Structures are given as C-alpha cells and as structure tokens.
Length: 341
Image (cartoon, rainbow, N blue to C red):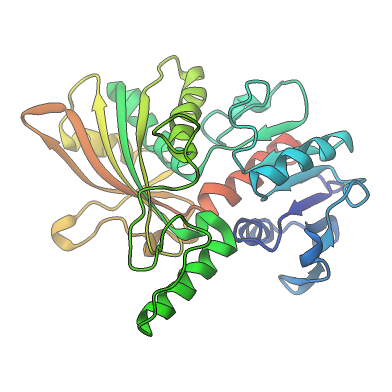
C-alpha cells in the first residue's frame, strides 16, 4: 500500500461513511493518514477507528488540501459541489451518489466488473453505480457469459438506510408511534413507511412514470455492460419497505438460450461476487438479515417455467451500505490511487 497516500472520507458520520471507515480499518489503513469530514453540524464529533479516535472537520477547500484520495459518501447535491472542489485540489475522487452516473465523461465503475475503466480517462472523478445496479450487474454477468441475457425485470425491496440516517430515524420513530397507537407523520418518505410498503423510492423524473432510482438501473446497466458487447434491457419497480438495512431483489431474467435451473445455478455459483443460498425446502434462501456486513450478494429461489424456458426467476439480497457502496468506494479508490495491495 502507498505509504504516503492520504484519504479523506466525506460524510463520515452517515450510514455509508461509517461503513467506509470499517472497510478501511479492515484493510489496516493507518489512522494518521485518514481525515474524516462532514458538514458544519457534525464538526467536532469523534469517531472510533480501531483503538484511535478521529475528529470530524468541516469539509472545505482548506481541509481537502494535501489529500490524495477523496471518498464521497454524500448526497448527490453535495457531491456535485464537493467533487469538483476535491478535483481542483489535486485529489482523485470516487462518488457513491447519483450525481455523475449519467455523465458520459465521468467513468461509471463497478470494481471487479469493469475495473479497466479506471485505466485512462479525462479528469479525476469516478462515479459508482447504485446498490441495486451493483447486485443486478453481478448476477446477470455470469448468466450473460453462459447463456446470453436479453432482458431483466427487477422489483427492488429497499431498506430505509438508502435514505441515510434520516431514513433510519424516521422508521424507528414511526414504528414506536404505531406500536403506541399513534399515527405518525411522514417527512423523509412520501408516505408512512412503518408497517407499510411505498412503491416510490426517490422523486419521479419530470414528465415520466419512472422514479430516478428506477431509471438509474436502466442507464447504469447500459453503461456497465457497454464494454461487454451485449447490453441487456433492465427495468423495474423500486419499493420502500419497513426494514432498516439491506435490499431484496426479485429478478426475472430472459435468457437468449434457455437453460435448465441446474446449469444456471452452476453459472451463478462460479462467481466470486455471489453466494448461493438455494435450498428452499430447508428454508435456506437470501434474507436481508443474513447479508449485513457480507461482501457477497446472496442469490437463491432459482426457478424456471416449462411454458417459457427462456425465463429464469430468482431472489437476491445485497448489503446496500456495505457491499453496495462502502466496499465499492474503497476498492475503486485504492485502485484509482494506485495503492491497492
């Protein structure tokens, strides 16, 4: 590892930022080369980092000076301001938000999937796909290689941690209120999410029936698979569910070449990004509670239909804060900075 690399984690007190620090700690990144940054309201907070304590500073051009790698675990609006600021300070920048995912000049990189995109590009900013896209791409790729994939339909059951600490707090407060016989108000989400399902995650696009989250899967998968020479059409529905961490995904995959379930299972089992949990009669299948802090994407409930043998149905879970964001941030950042061990 580059002994001189200095890393700044921006948004360090948030859901993803906390996971980024845990990931860096597991890689034995030294505390003295790590800076934790946030907004003015989090200035002065102290964060545990192994046996060390890191004090949060307010992010600014001054606090970014001398930093070699900036990991942005911030909302899109903040990233649009902070990424150019960090780039101007001479740092490499990796952003986990949706701020730059649609910009062709900014590489969209999923480590282990299209890491070659980090090789040469204009500028110093890299964007990461969403947690749902991360899961879909890693599931589809081994199937694409073995059988070809034409289309993917997704229903994503998304935990409230996708809205950060505010989402976690709102579900906690709503659950408490409902158990006490009170009807809570919704602030973070468009409707009450406690003991409810809301078929809207994020705002709707202008003059469109699709939310930004849903449209993002289509765009991000098209960008990721462009280098593979085969671009499956990915579309679906995002549903906010009353769970704290982890996303569940119901996928319907239309293969170009029909395949028995056993062959599809073997293709998925061969991917290091996936963990196969597929013994439903023994009650073994993916659950959000099992995937927390697991870097793999859990896959199970594989089924096909004799009447439509080209379709494969499965269920998957992904740790949206850990695998879906923090691990990708750290891996892409260290590769970008040329210090991956």
